[in-house]
Image (cartoon, rainbow, N blue to C red; front, side, top):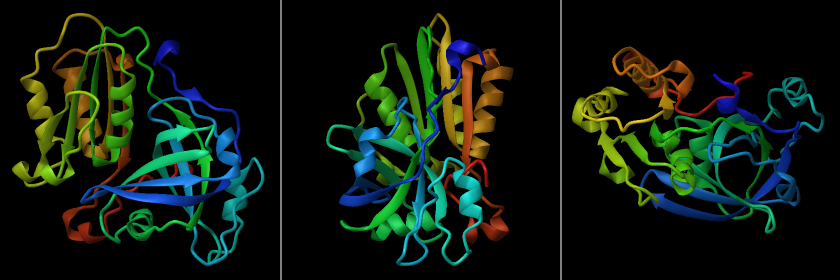
Length: 270
């Protein structure tokens, strides 16, 4: 990817404690959790898809790594004390008030982050760590933003910041996942295609007339959705690979073991 579209990294950070101050249900399967902490005022933020690593307690005594080599320190902790780490997107941050919002797509207790978010209450404490952002539209004339439930927070923020025309597609389970966002969104329901990730999105893209000019594409979500959309755009619509950012936030397990499918963004270093 060209330098103008390269990821925006942040200076090395250390994990910090954050306490839940508010829990708000946005939709039956989406909850917003507001956190605060002394270190949030120094939390490096680089853009609307900024990744935050969350450290979830496995006991009543939450311990966080304290050094810059946080991953090695984490792995050295005893298994029964080691926090569970997952990756999420910063939905909104207020440095002055030391508040950070994280939106969680809920899928029951099949993953530790969803299980925690589904029962979170004011006073609960976790760890957070700033990482970086990948959204870089650069000099694009128009944008194509695509994702699933797990990409809703990032695309919501992108729509609020966009300065060029946007075509947005969000593929979700059904109408219960629809939210009011800042711009027009094409909501696509997997229930219409027996749950196949990416199928409805590619179908919808086939009927989209692309505007003139240079595009920027951002696509993230379940791995099959991200890869199938990128393959279609490159092979059938002729979009330069360098104009596309794509990321598999999670991977659905084969049907035989779908009951234990992980639908949370595990840390890249894991």
